[in-house]
Amino acid sequence: MANLLEWSRAYTGRLANYDTSTLIARSDELATRLADELKAGILPFLTQPYRAKFEADLAKVLPAITQFKHMLLLGIGGSALGCRAIQTAFAPAQDLPGDPEHAVWVMDNVAAEQLEAMLTALNPKETVVVVISKSGGTIETIAQYFLVKDWLQAALGDAWTKQMVVVTDAVKGYLRTEATTYNLYNLEVPDYLGGRYSALSAVGLLPAAYLGIDWQALLNGAYQVAKPLVEDPRKNLRQHPAFALATWAKALMDHNYSQLIFFSYIPQWAMYGPWFAQLWAESLGKQGQGSQPVTATGVTDQHSINQMFLDGQRDKGCLFLTSRKLQQGRSFGQNLPDKWAYLKGKPFASLLEAEALGTQMALCASGVPLVQLDMEDTGPSQAGAMMMLLEAATIFTGWLMGINPVDQPAVELGKRLANSRLGAPGYTQEAADLQAFLGVPKQEQAF
Image (tube, rainbow, N blue to C red; front, side):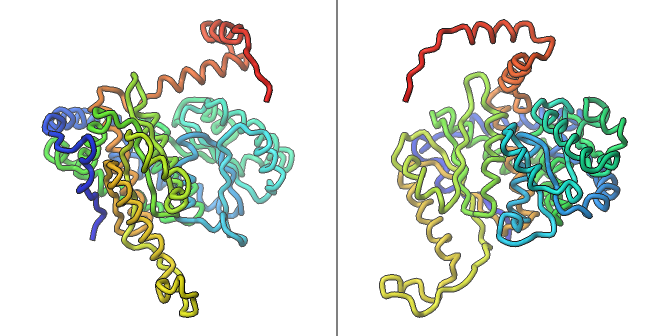
């Protein structure tokens, strides 16, 4: 048994009879680049060089934080999406009726009402706060930190420092200074590990460990996928499934498929959709290129956006996520009405399996090129494997496109403009651009 990519309907629609040899021939070029970047240490999500230190640091921090019932996590983008995906997949109790032993609450926006609701509902004496920012200066996260720090100090006095954990750069940035000044618990975000590639580091693994999730299995599953690439990229890249996915994704873009659906028929993995969307969009949406990730969950979205997938513009490819070992749940009894007698004795999960097959067939009948990711099971090891596969495929797709898949220049522009609007110094050009933008006469219409 193994995780499988199923390719029989991948090269359909406008990809039918497409000759991929030109793209595949670039495997030597990509393998050389991969070897060079691995040697330079700038793809740490593949090699996990930080693992030993993380394990040692976690052993010091974890006993101190698991005594608290709640974790309030402050972070945005890659500092939050991986955590939320892992939590909903493997520790869903906090989202269900009942009173879980531990719960993680993610504050991933600057919504004043949401923050106020969090701080009103949580007891500071029962809450450990984790603030995550690689740079240590992300304005949204720092703003949250200032307010939550005041909240802790008001309730705990000087003891607030025992309930604050910082996850940031090892040596620089405001949060690193705070950790040093106040002797806060802290964990490192390694160099060259951007937020959207950081879920399988302290960023996502600290909350996972707090919740009792098998974080070692997440890392182990990921490394098994990365291992052939790390050990001998020149030998193994051409046959690696991540390169095959990248080749397919580039072929889709070259044939005017502008959207890539991530359709999860593992319901408890639904939050991996937003995690993938950030990974794909922020890595590849550059220089007028890329494809728009669209997340969907089966069977929920069969009753909403699936109409567009099936009968809208023919501009979509699909990654179709399934598992062969879903929990079967309760079985239907024998006392069903005649209209639904065909359900008698069947497990509840048989609906999900049948509807997944039906949707897959409908997508293929509508000409949507589709690759099925069929997971051996839905445990942490398999989730780690999927995450690594998609991260590596994203890197290789970016290289085939001729762009840098680890920067985000357009996002940085928005951040600079926001800082200027708030009055931060050093943004002369942005201030002028804002003045010009705001100077355009409004054309308002009431409704």
